[in-house]
Image (tube, rainbow, N blue to C red; front, side):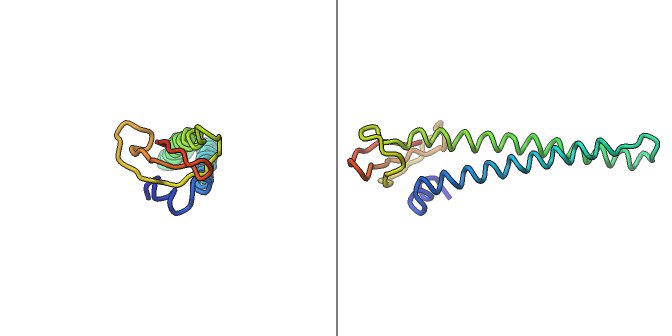
Length: 130
């Protein structure tokens, strides 16, 4: 679902809340992967078979990879949500997240790849988010 469709269906506050929940789910996933990696490294016995050693090293490597990917997704999702939250304030009256979507169009090079034109419900001022 695109950003403007999510705004039309749920509104900015609920979209923002969902982004925070999603980003923190990535954070928890990364932490659990880090724990998995530490446990796998802890139980390695160098006197055991080579297959067991390779398996535990592979589990530790997979845990490390999942941890790094989850951290990157957490950072990107949180950054995007915070950057758009800063733009959700009406320039005229200062109302936060009190706007309706007028239109949207693709704009490569922007944060979401789209520019959303919005109108404040309090003072009727138009501005862009994206």
